[in-house]
Length: 633
Figure 1 (tube, rainbow, N blue to C red):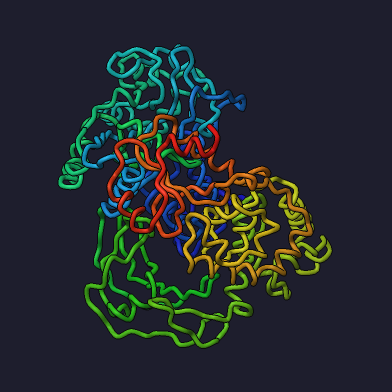
Figure 2 (spheres, rainbow, N blue to C red):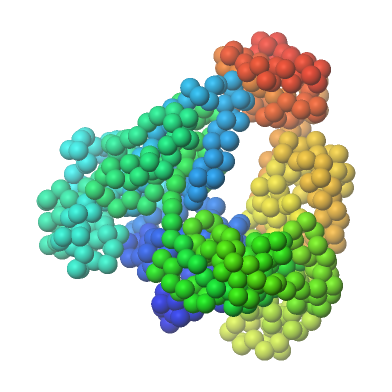
């Protein structure tokens, strides 16, 4: 799907409201806005992109590829890409102190796992530059690209670009930026955003006079991250003085910044925490939008999700907030409606910070509420599950059926055309399952009212979805089983093949690190519900990239195969190598000691909590040398 320019401009002007966009339209707009931003021609402000559109995408489609891959840099450059000297990942983001607190909790857990006292750790904070990311190896300068491959833009240095602080080249990752004061005085009348100007420095075309002058004036610079001014202190200091530290760091440079980056400095904890596909776990960026408003509620409408959850949507008096007109906001659940009095005439505190934008912080003045007793989509009686109001008519509720079919194609993320409008039209012609869609031919689509060209394209996209390779965990996640997001699917498929998972009992799943008994029970029930539909679709031989099993073919021969082991303390060898070798033997690696743990392997400087837990559960405690002897090393 490609949005028309008229629609894009309507979204930018906010003639079309956020809640009126379909999921597919929202995703496409985010992709276009992201591409324009990365190419140096932003169509909306960075603040609006982060706090409105991307936040809403995260709310609706948390598994969308845009949220789980390194953002491409400089798409307008040459198609010729080269491997970067080292991988350049994105930075995880937090939008509140509570989220920073959760990151610190993860750091604390990692410290316990390897026997480090968290109070001894040092954290550094640097301004998060809003420029063009690049990597300078001393000979060449590359764009970040997709994090692994980028374009050679060494020509920028050939044009006279200097390194910040007149320091040497070859300092690795950094950003091309322009001084904020210089931009406002000399360039703001010609360029809407600094980003537009920075792009003009990088493009292959010859520089215009203003760009060359900025380089000559050393107002346009390459700033290595290693050259950024730093606040450094302990986690205790950060906790006590967070707001002042953020304010201080944001004012350290004369460049556009859009946050503060916090990162650990200890190499041991950094290696242990590692990274995922998108970002380093030992690093996080804080971005904040403090704008709030008091708004009157005009009405509260129920909205049905694919899982049957009924979400209250508050219709509001039109309110300007951070440059946008807000007329609707999604409530958390009907428990909030009931407990806080979210109804017609109530006054709420509305904000555009956090992951759900716009967000209802709290009800300031309650009003009488209306709690629906019937599903607005199918008319079935609703049921309370904790704070959530649910429609349990999962098989025949139109909103749920449509939502599940749309979700399948979104999570596959290897096809176009099967957005909400297409799925609704298919539903109107008695299509109720994904497997039915794959039986359709071009004539079937035409007979349903799709045009000839559209029908041909839909068939092409169905074929593409089966032939273009995707990960097996993504295919499994697309079925929308409760508690089976992409992460849990990948974790499950490290222990069992996708063909074997439907025969698993809950105890087998609960034995996998990361799965509790309640989650395992829900997964077993969920897999049973999709088994028939899964078999129908598996018949189409999707091109699946199979997850590598943690247990190899020979692992069953080892006495520790299937045992659960926790490593703690400082090891003489590489902990990561030890874990990898253990997995090859069929050993399950756990991070915390529980009654299900079989062995605790200890190195130096071991935390007493794990020793005490091991003794409490009667575990076998092994030294590193004893463990290595057991596995024959």
